[in-house]
Length: 494
Image 1 (spheres, rainbow, N blue to C red):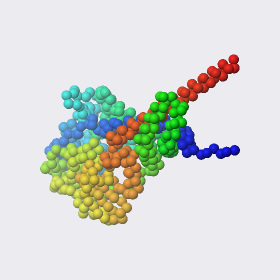
Image 2 (tube, one colour; image 1 turned 90 degrees about the vertical axis):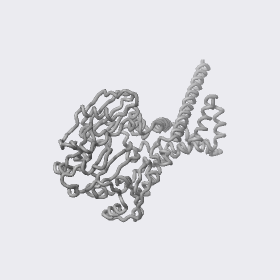
Image 3 (cartoon, helix red, strand yellow; image 1 turned 30 degrees about the vertical axis):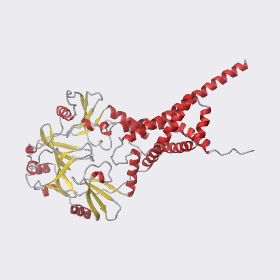
Image 4 (cartoon, helix red, strand yellow; image 1 turned 135 degrees about the horizontal axis):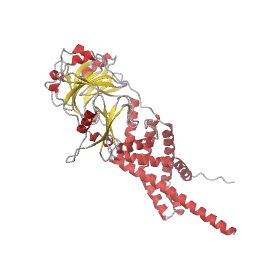
């Protein structure tokens, strides 16, 4: 008996079809959900553009002594001066998990355990963005929630305590979640966000809460899809013979769809491979842990004069959104925020003020060297660079780049506030590189709403749809042949 000659294109065709029967629907889901997520600006999804900045602090009224707050709450974790409804308040943070805080009138020192429903309503109306020329937004309902709903709660928000759910009468059912004790807008939700949330769950194949990216179902589907894609690439290499064989059994409609499928595959197969390979890596590999240098606690009262007030310390500073006691490299400062972006990496205007005399100060290399020495570390070099020139994706502010003497870690600190931003190692750089590949963020913008991302996502969706339509047409054709065969058989038997 003669052995059948091995045919690479025939085997590739067979396994491409078989494997696509397994993951074809999921590939279609990935294409639909991916296109949705990259097409709508992520900051609109977050509702960032629906909230206006808080009012500047009326610092002249902040005459209550700060040391009196420490005497009343000796275990407090932080004090922040901010404006709420035409009155400056001191936000006194008492605990983090669970979150516990209160407000004190910055003028009289009167404690406010929680804000009233009427105050929350006014805060919401003051902070919501209204288009020019349009009537102010109306509130449909306000409800106090002791625990946040599952679609709001997350690891970052679960410890925020009770919050008010403020629902606006808007086309997209906008909702603000405002912390009951401090008036902070914790997060925003609306219809497009809820759709995005489900698209995300479908995309990572975590149908519970959308928090588990490293699940086995996603990894297995990615591996099968990668093998199917490789088989498809072999078909493209032998595309002339394959299309000639396919055209013999194809109707004109099916032939046109197969041609469309071929040309779309030629356009997107490389990017599809990058998406699948990088997605598999990000799912299978945990985000690398790197050390974070935390400054020791400060005895604030030891650095503060008696009866010191924010009005005294900040008499030369005006038009700022907040002022808070700030521990920078184990040294006491006040951090003033004049302008704040949607997120931490967005362009902001902040500066440090001396706790003793209110003078503006800046972080020096000697401050960083002393802090590293306190942690038993030496620095190789440290320099200030513009945010866009750093390795941090989407960073728009100036940063300190500090290389440790061992040359293992690179530390980044905000040049304005001294806040630790990130610690990079070789493993973390590889992980970040995979994120850039997956988001097509080759320019380091820090998001995935790029033109070419949308183009390739749309082409991938058309590719998946052409394959799905081909499958349906062939299935229908086989059913038609089967019905004809059965009919002819019955006729011949008669």
